[in-house]
Image (cartoon, rainbow, N blue to C red; front, side, top):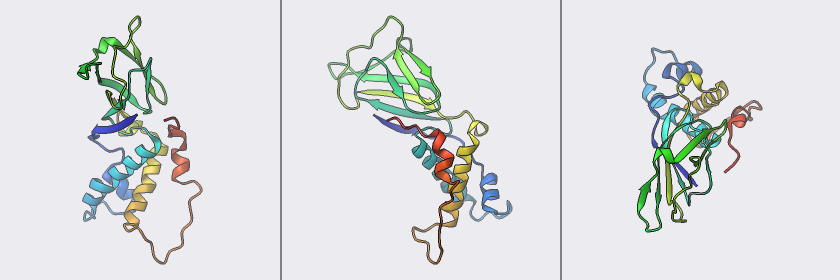
Length: 192
């Protein structure tokens, strides 16, 4: 099972102004704006997405499966809808499932896709990547993103801005006991 983002979010959950406030940079100081907005904020979001296995902002993703089992689960805590499901038939020809052939059940930590009542999945190849599910996932807007996830992003933004190198010389470090891992823990999808 492989999930990839194919259409990135059009907005970030943290604005440039919010990031600059976290970094204690005056709004009028703009020399690092492109770095913060173009690299640091998206990288922090992507890191939280990877660590929690959930989409933060609305984006289009694909899930590749090996077959059409009785039902299958999309392990992304914020699934909104299915765009498309394609599969390889027994002749290795790509086919598309009609949206009337399946149902989507959105749950708190995942979404379940099952055949429509009184229907079964068509015969499909049982090979790696023979089924592709395209879906939309993520919170609707920045206000809907849980505050803990936004705070985890803020911690990363601060760290990425202040520590732009792999090695920090002349500083002692200690882990913040109320740090990043504890912030994201309730949102991590532990199933694979």
